[in-house]
Image (cartoon, rainbow over all chains, first blue to last red; front, side, top):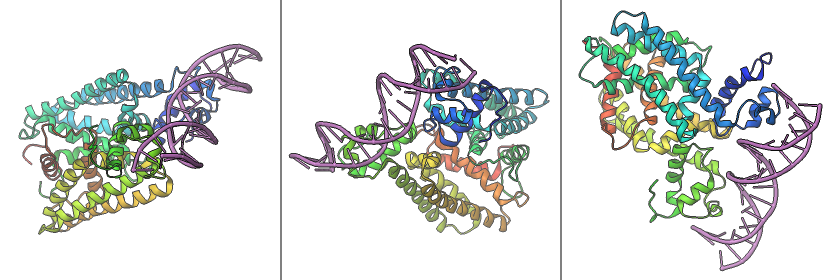
Amino acid sequence: MAVDGSLPTSARLLSTAAALFRAKGYAATTTRELSATLGIRNASLYHHIGKKEDLLYALCVDSLGHIRGAASQAMASEPDAISRLRALVRAHVVSALDDLDKHATMLIELRSLSPERRSKIVALRDEYEALVSSAIQDAQREGRIRADIPARHLTLALLNLLNWTIFWYQPGGDLTAEQLGELFARLFLHGAAAYS
Amino acid sequence: MAVDGSLPTSARLLSTAAALFRAKGYAATTTRELSATLGIRNASLYHHIGKKEDLLYALCVDSLGHIRGAASQAMASEPDAISRLRALVRAHVVSALDDLDKHATMLIELRSLSPERRSKIVALRDEYEALVSSAIQDAQREGRIRADIPARHLTLALLNLLNWTIFWYQPGGDLTAEQLGELFARLFLHGAAAYS
DNA sequence: GTCTATAAAGAGATAGAC
DNA sequence: GTCTATCTCTTTATAGAC
């Protein structure tokens, strides 16, 4: 849990919290552990936040903005639906793994938010997933994605394929995020069977 | 959280705990909530268990035995590697969703176990994943699964596709577990692209 | 197998000084 | 922006009666 001690506390707050929340879970992470990692006393934490949950909420908003921006930008320059879909898959993987602590926490710890805040995050997540679904539908309309499976089911399967990566991906392993994005794009489109 | 009040506490213990752990998270679930759901006082809980973590551990062992048994049995009667792989995918989905509370808790709350117990569960999980990997390697050897992607990468992708389902599947929705297993088998093998 | 009562520790959060 | 000191509540778990 190496954290840059040269940055001001406020700048290290969210990423430090995200790292702890991903490693131990939100509920199991104490504000004292967080303060200690930041190098301050527990009480000093409350100069920056109102309460612990504020960190979880802010980090969820952050990570969804991050992936949403990366996906939109990657798709913008592609000429056709199937290219946009491939670009989306690659951008999703690269963005999520670049922002792993926040992204994983957002996906797993949603249930620890208050009902009001959870609704807001779920709405943002649904917005992003609608983008994925649109990309699939567009490719179906252009005849490049099979039409015998509902777009909704294809979207669920694709998100399955992408999202579970947060549980096992280790930066510095034998697969870069780019390679993994390429692998998932290829597998989602063409499958694992031989001769296909 | 409807629980059968006619069964003895000991018989309802694991499944009740699993339901709460899945809904709220292990750390966020108090032993008092669990006792209340069981209809007993908090102290009475400790007639059945030594401590809260025992429940998490027992339920992890349980769920891995469940899916392991289902997978082995489903594969046993299949004549070739590709049929065994399809049977494994279907059995995995049906078993995991049939045992959703325990299975999801096992996958998500591993990190809340003590290091010793976590190692044991990880070993059981790795054993199961080795079974999946073997099925893929067998099918590669029989020329039915593409050999240009390492079995390890195909295994990771397949487990991604299967495992994330725990986050959104709702029994009683428009997809049965059987249909979902069939969908995943088809997509994993043949992909989403048209003309493949 | 469940109860009442309670111990012991740890949690989030606040007050007010520097 | 961080500190010391502390409040208050909740948590897991135990003792011993029925």
